[in-house]
Amino acid sequence: MKCIVNGTVVLKDKEIKADVLINDGGRIEKIGSFMIPAGCEVTDAAGKYVLPGIIDMHVHFREPGYEGKEDIETGSRAAAHGGVTQVACMPNTDPVCDNAVVVSYIVHRAKEVGLCKVHPVGAITKGQKGEALADIGKMKNAGAIALSEDGKSVMNSQIMRLGMEYGNGFGLKCLCHCEDINLADGGCVNEGFNSTMTGLKGIPRAAEDIIISRDICLAESIGCPVHICHVSTWSGVEIIRAAKVRGVKVTAETCPHYFALTDDCITSFNTFTKVNPPIREEKDRQAIIRGLKDGTLDCIVTDHAPHALKDKQVEYSLASFGISGIETSFALSYTYLVKSGVMTLPELMQKMSYVPAQILRLEGGEIKEGAPADLFIADLDATYKIDSSAFLSKGKNTPFIGMEVSGKVCKTFMDGRETYSE
Ligand code: DOR
Ligand code: ZN
Ligand code: ZN
Image: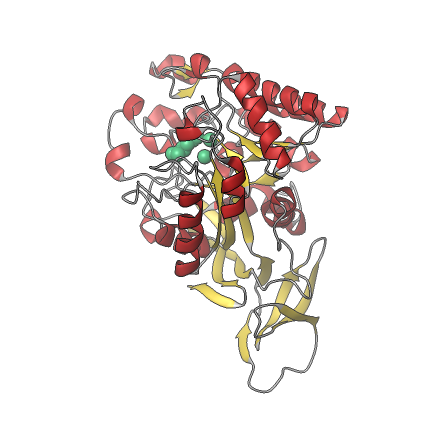
């Protein structure tokens, strides 16, 4: 038995002062005040918060193939450091995760590492080439929990429709990376004032919005659910809001960099600000925050995209897209959304844990009796500057270096087992 005492526990819709008892099966036995059983291992969380383990439904752990950028072990360690207990990892590996062998490799390797529940996302098409559907049924049987072509869109709408239909038949949702490849072609930042001033080629909002619209349209016409990845545009938020009003089964995510930054940061030519979709303007940032608040945007993910320094220490237009985000998402979200008064802490944790569990139909996402003891202890008063040298991820590529945030992960538990301790 283990016990976390004296903390403030964040339940699904409220926070309470309570102790949490964890049984030897790794589940939450009791929440409240009770006699601590003899021989119980006690963790004192006085002055701290006990929060549901974050479920980050969009990460790149890079294994197999790009272990120089990240592997399942370092990704899992980084996750635990970020308060994350479950992730969905995207298929743009080498080989692409488009078959049962790669899916089961990831499942088995992640279990061996044992620091985070890693759920593979299968590619929609073979080799992510956008031509022939991948082995969807076999990937499902091997443990894939969703489908995605992340890194790009399936540009052929007929293939995309088939992917949605087949996926739906196997209970796998499509997680849509929305980018019209012809409109985005060669761009590396948001198209606007700052792209003009810097001379960097822009990616217009329309490149994202067109595919968001298309994928909603496809899902609506065949009556299956769809999930929109990393929404970055104000107009994308509007499109999703309107679809929800019509009753389309659409869910959507955004990332901390879209509500914490504007493209003013690209004027430094710091390649750590290069991400796809690009960081947009203040109007977009405000719309993303409003969308999170009113439920148009259902959840917060990181799109954790670790890269080696050599992939970033090149001129802006040649640098790889992506931000290493899994170790900063809680602090950034807490700082920008809760401390600033946009939402309450239980509301934030729903967006980071409960809702992703619902979208992917995973067990967990909430601190309650009987649930797996996936949780973390955070010191919300701890204020510090983000320091990428403290990351456990191989990817040190963050545009947030030196930014002051509040909210520090002190300890993380997965199935009652400690996976991180500061
Ligand atoms: O910034 C990004 N990085 N966006 C993507 O869609 C892919 C990702 C990656 O794999 O690095
Ligand atoms: Zn993507
Ligand atoms: Zn991604």
